[in-house]
Length: 213
Ligand code: NI
Image (cartoon, rainbow, N blue to C red; front, side, top):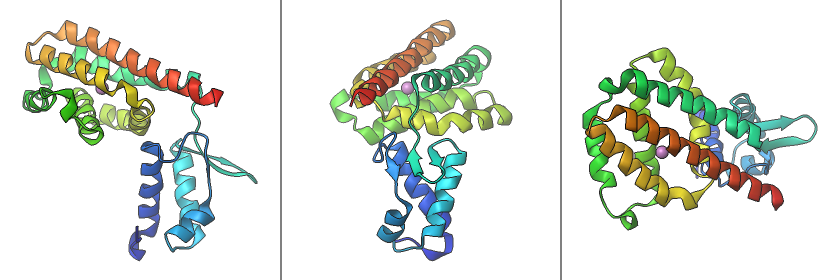
């Protein structure tokens, strides 16, 4: 990819961020700023700046005199992040259920209504993010939304750690959407809690497999 000169920093930041979130760069993998600079025909400085910014956001680890690495999450960290995620989403279902945008949910309902074979990774990701975002948006609370967005990159990263779960997650999304349309708030909270628990389990099991390699 050719990088435009006017916003090199931002573009290189987005490029590396996406490589991490999509797991094209694996957890724990070393990132070589010089290599990235050469590949993109730019100087090393903006690459280093981007990596420092990513380190600040928790996606990259900067080990002085050793180099930059993709953040390798411990099981404890995964549990903690998922606890925060659950806290926000379940809270919004309990407190702001009536404000969930039903137009969005019904549209998503049509999209998840098709056979699983029609769902590719990209489509799944989009539906997943839109659905979970709709709970948070229902709060109408800009502080809460901002806080949730701070863990959003981790949510996206974890989404890509265990591709085998896509089918099950798809069925769970179908169920959640149906329950929202049927106005069954309590069941939505229960099924969502279980859904998030399964996400956590899948991420941790992938993490453990990764440790054994
Ligand atoms: Ni989901």
